[in-house]
Length: 171
Ligand SMILES: [Zn+2]
Image (cartoon, rainbow, N blue to C red):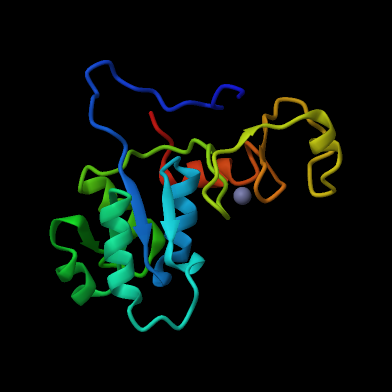
């Protein structure tokens, strides 16, 4: 295993473990943002559609995997008690802000997880960069990461820069 790219800065007295999330179908964009921010986030979108008991399943998965349920459904949030959070806004930046204000997440962009599948990305090999026709031709000053699960290439600046500007970058 190669070392995790851009590991988040941890303070020595920071012993609070990172939260894990499970997110309902209404929050697809927030799911991607949380992954770019380095938070282990699973989505209801990976479950088979049409399950009448999906709400119950989300609550159970959350408990089993020690994930906090994020939902736009007030009733579901109520059922999840202290393991669920009702997300108030439809706007993704306000959603991120709500989680920051609750002290659950930090304002940062780590690019350490694949936004599509939540897998931890690793440093990309040169052949993988060269094989991706969507990669920039000039590699100078860039760091490239690879999702082994999706076969997808990421680099700082692809999503990182724009996101960092929006999220406000971890200083
Ligand atoms: Zn992936």
